[in-house]
Image (cartoon, rainbow, N blue to C red; front, side, top):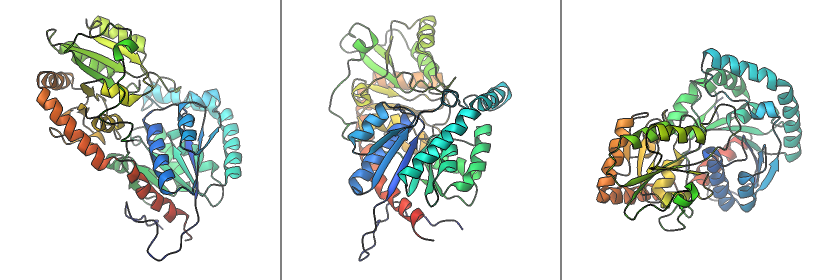
Length: 425
């Protein structure tokens, strides 16, 4: 039988009903760094801590670091359970067919002994923690969590990725979905993509990501991007355009650099690549040295700064006049877009997939097709030459972020889901 999910935002307690006992939720993260999926997890934790202070919320990550530091700051429990090296390096990037699929298969064989030992340790840890719900955040943990869950606990997958085109991973998820009680998808596009993979008996619920509107705000600290990039200060009046992203291969760094190269030299602007490597999965990220080499070959080395990872993404965005999102594939959600809008920046978005759901082109962002170098260059040129348009998009973007992406919304949508899953059937 398909569990009935309450309407998003439905009250957790009906009038006159006695308060129900607090829940224990264990979150399994595939990384201890702070990528988009991990920031989304923190926003969910913050919302639940405020709405359900009696709940026990715990996060298990493969290493200590920024994620668990932030978890502790929220007053939640933080634990580490290290991946064995072969499992940490295993990923399905580029494994949709041919040699990529063979490399993935070989990597899975190498990782198998260590994965079996890790799975035993994970089972023991979860048995000790005795959660009501195991909420997995990352493809590896979707697979492992479904096999390690204690008796009586419910498993929720939080999908931040399109999975149907990742044939090897889709097959593994399909086989593991029998142990899953429900799936949270970060956009309608992800939900529609996941439904055939997980099957008709597993409900899929769309819950958009959120933004910390106190951290990503109009006025606040401003990063010194030139100093971070080792550049002299830009002349007054220079337009600052930045790609803020992880170093994932599909985040469009090459598209961004080629678009900057297509702009006329007399346009007074400086471009920034804001971000650094955070994941250990083999082959999943581009290298900054390669991007520097590309900028030199395009003749724009003097117009581009590489800042590395920014500890305060909000401060980095407030230092920019235009924030560019240039993903070459449909974006599952596009958290950077929502964060930049919250900061009141003019945004150019590669509006496909979930990213197409969170912007209204021409109202709160300019939209281009994924991989469209000429379209991206034209959008940047328009914004460089039209400060009124930049201001209008920034104001509308902030209004959109406040209305749609306040993280307090998450608890109102997710807490009833948890309650329904653990209720006696």
